[in-house]
Image (cartoon, rainbow, N blue to C red; front, side, top):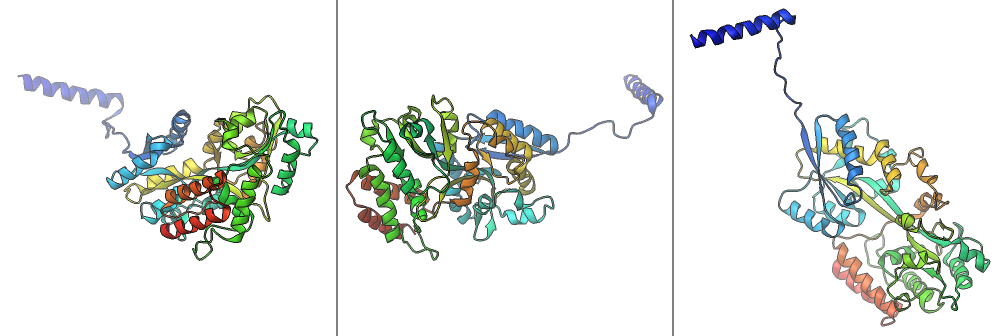
Length: 419
């Protein structure tokens, strides 16, 4: 009897549905099958996670079959965790790499060949990126990364100190001779005012030697770090501090950073990165920027980050969509400029127009002018050993325990072992 009652109820239910509008073929619906992409980032945490989530929401709305799972680590831990995950076959589908570490991963086969993905995407064009930034993430004529952001190093200057010294403001055409001349006039020992600060370290050295026509390796990969041009460039770096007395030593800095020295109003010029704009926004004096001075030619420091895809992923198509969107969409570019989360690498002038008119410093065009002269540092598989080794020898030259000749001679021996 119970079975009969249940059967009658089921029949009645069908009849009611038919009367309401006919039988429906698909009464039960299922969610769209989604592909989950793991994205590992160092630049988002901790200050820009909300902004990253904002972009993920836009992307997922446009790509309803893809979800993004975010994993983060601070800069100090990021590459250790990345190496462990790759070794354990747990590599994220998409992850960030800075230029200096890019070659190490590309050379070991850890990255997906993006040329194959770009060829299958009729909507993609490399022209959307700055050519310099796009080309930086190519290895052996194969594209392995989409440039995400860039930053440059420029010359910051204190307009008030220039005015007090009666010196004209820096211009794009300035050489280091011009900068040193201005710094000598700004220097005031009685008031403890310094003329110039350009740190003696690896990141400044590779630029300075390029400005003097030198390099760490020649076109054939031979070590030429101890060339006469490089020795001369290093000696000029040392002279700014030790001969001309326009740049303080570490002892004279007394533990104060170069940025804090500039903020105190005691420094005429500072070579530093555009990431200092926010830190200097509260300065109680007028300041601006210009393209960094050169020697026989210009050369400026170019930092870049990219999104890469793991060579072991089985979700390459979805990973490509996310990497392309996050590095090149107008939504992403506008978000970065609005939030100060580095600068997008896209070449569309309309996308970066808001940056140029964002206020202090007034001459933000110098950031983009610097790209005309940008160079990247020398990169080998044992990159950290190269940077640390050269940096230590430069420090010894700064302290006077090695001459410029001795420091670069020892650097040449070090690089021969690292090649």
